[in-house]
Length: 383
Ligand code: USQ
Image (cartoon, rainbow, N blue to C red; front, side):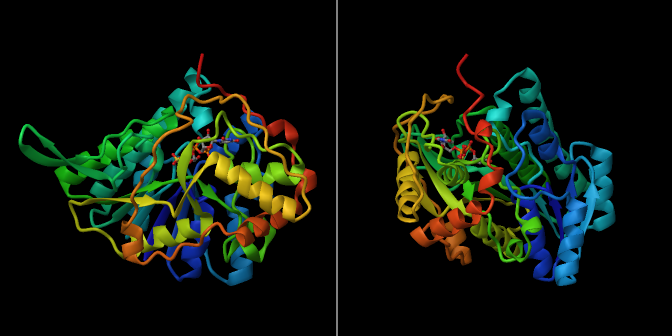
């Protein structure tokens, strides 16, 4: 297949590009290096070596003989994106091209504005470029489980049937996100649904939980191919942060009571999920929503797991709850359903003790590069 990966320089975009190229697909990545410039601006650079996209594509080619096309450009600029779609004529567009940090989106007017403009314009432009130049193309959009928030009822897979005054209808499941970043994904879903039902686009919206890990079949070939592994307060997600803190001897930063519960998945499963979505596209006029996670944990459960495995390896791991910088429920119900990807054939790669110790061992090689100043949260939701 001809696959256009938008946001191909990212934590998920780059390993997806390698995985799909290794499988024999014709892959073009596009990226404007927004994450790299925000990382520079906020002092949040990745832990492991981080050559630019062109350099990584060259390294990957020299090791495998397979090509990953690189286009440096901004998806929020319609002319650039529509030319890429018109020239490449993709069968599938994978849309990762968003400002992905919840804390960054909550820092200031400027960071909120950038997040809103970048994320919504990119999605809107992709919709129009596909309608104009590749109407058969399947759009796979990375959404987030955070769109649903933490409601006091079961979280269904995208849709809910509501009975009201004796009548029934099916709607998008109610969404109430906990950061502006997550809210942009709610707005993306609404935009996509409008264009799907009005113009017959075909779209898969993946509601993904926080991802962890730094290993994929291709990334393991050379350390310069490791996806951007962040442990800072801006881009680092909770598991990757806890693993790095465990290695550095920094007490694990549980925010508040630690009862915040989410669905998690291993980076290798993200690649499998996106691949399954691609090879089983929905029909035209369908917005398929898949909840993308494999295991549910509270923050306390994650911290205990990393501590236990780390201590077993001889690391001095401690847990130290800190004041929660976010506005979120710290104790809540979380019954989220996710059967769609299993039905497509997903076989989860779970967070066993071996997986945790494997990640800790990998991070230990970079112990000297860990900067403790990057760890504590700098952005507070509450004013
Ligand atoms: N948390 C801690 N300690 C930390 C970091 C985080 O207790 O040091 C807590 C947070 O307060 C939150 C939970 O861990 O309750 C998850 O936080 P996170 O930073 O791992 O994830 P989040 O900001 O919610 O966003 C991440 C990705 C985002 C994705 C989302 C899925 O950055 O792209 O959309 O996970 S979800 O969380 O299900 O919305």
